[in-house]
Structure formats: C-alpha cells, structure tokens
Length: 348
Image (tube, rainbow, N blue to C red; front, side, top):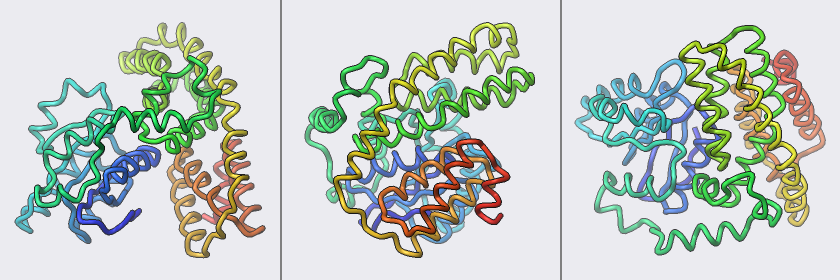
C-alpha cells in the first residue's frame, strides 16, 4: 500500500492497474488531497480496517473480488462501525449504460475512465466532508493549468497529429505523468501486439478480448482516440464471437498500434536527456527492497505494466552496481516475456 502524506483529507484508491493508481493519486495530490493506493478488493478491505478514510475510489473490473463484491463487504464493515464512507465507482466508459445499476449496488456516484481531473474534482467535492473543504488547493484556472503543463512537453510531441496531446495530458493530469504513461505504452507495443496475433492464431478469443480491452483503455488514456475506438469495436466483436470480423480487421488495429512505436521513439532521448541534467539521490535499502517486493508480486500475476512502472520509478535514484545489474536483467527478461527467467531473478 502506497501512502502519500498526512493532510486532513484522505482518499483510498483501489485499482488493479498501477498506471491508473499513479494518475489518480497525482490528480488528487494536485488539489492537496492525500491518498493511499491498493490494487485489489482484498487489500481495500484490509486498508479500511486499519485506517479511516473520507472517500474511496473503487474500480469495478478487478480480478478475484470485483468492485461490487468489495463494496458489499465494505458496507458490512462500515455498518458495524456506524460509519458511512462514500464509495465512488470508477470504471470504463463502455459501462455508462449501467449507471443506475452501480448506484443501486450502493455506490454514491460513478466516474468513467479515462478520468478527467475536472470531472473527478466535481464529483468528489460533492461527497467530501464540508469542514475539510477549505484545506483544498482548488485551481482558479484549470485551462491555464493545462496550458502550462502543455508547455512542458517536448516540441516534437506537440508538433505531430498522431495523438490528441491536450486530451492525453488532461487525462493524465500533468506533463510528467503523461510522459510516464507514454513510455509505458511504447515499451510494451511489440510484446502486446504479438500476443494479440498469437491469440487469434490459437483461437483464444477470451484472452484476445482481455488484451484488446487493455489496449483500448491505454490508447484512450494517452490520447490515441482513433486506435482506442478501433480496439473497442474489436473488443465487442470478440464478445459477440464474430471471428470473421476479428480476422479481417485486427491487422489494421495492429498497424496503427505498431506505428506509434516509431512516433514515440524520441521519448527515450527526451527522458534520458532530462535525467542527465540532474544529480540522482542514492536509493535507500528499504526503498530498493520495497521495489523488489513489488516486482515479485507483479511477476506472480504476469503484470507487465506494473513491472515497467516500478522499473521506471527506480530511474529517479542512483543505484548501486549490483542493483543496476539486477534491474538490467529484469528489463531484458521482461522484454522477452521470459516469466520463468523473471521468477529466477526474483527468487520466487
């Protein structure tokens, strides 16, 4: 569980995708709201038993215990304490037709992904305790804020029309978080595109739908709206078992997907150049061990995006030689999707 501070207002973020947790936490932080982040319904329940929260942002689609089942368990816990913590569902935009069902299940409100900061703020202000609202750092000019963040992006990114940069920046919340999201997206293009092809060859439609759904969400997040819409159409085709449409159209999806790798290639130079201008602080033993533990957990559930996010966070530190070698080995194994090798590296 990640703890970001000790201000008056505290929100619990529950989402099985680390990039979503990072972005939501960053959005809240920009308004002076502290948050804890967890990746499952089980961890959510544990966190609520250990701490008090003013509001919970709970993802709907999660493995093992989904958001609705988690909410039912939370209600039983809170009822026993005579508490009423507002729980807001955050879920994909394809669930908009289920709005009344979410509210009937007990959610106070629903926010649809990709979440825009202005919409999230509008919703959570409705449910936060009034006596704590004066402590918030509310924006006086959000459009100006987005414009300021836009100016921090490299010129090559702003001068092309492959992505809706303003939309992606708004969804991610800041230039730094947008760059991180782009790096994660780019680094997994080859592997995930190959997986989609393999699932078609093996007639594994269930895994095809899951991978295309993930692509739909990530593409929307970074402003690749056309690619996201194409992925949404093929996700529905998979659910409808329309094999002929999948086999006729997936190559177009993958062409667009893979073309973004070349477009985003300057990202590596941009990030490494930025890092070279500052002296990195040495990482503590506890921080390094926490990163290793997180990577081990993500290896166990084959979560490439979260491993990449953790590796990316280590770039903010100066690592000892032994750690550099281990991180390099992890990256090499991940690039090959060598899960057995990753288990050996992490001793699991």
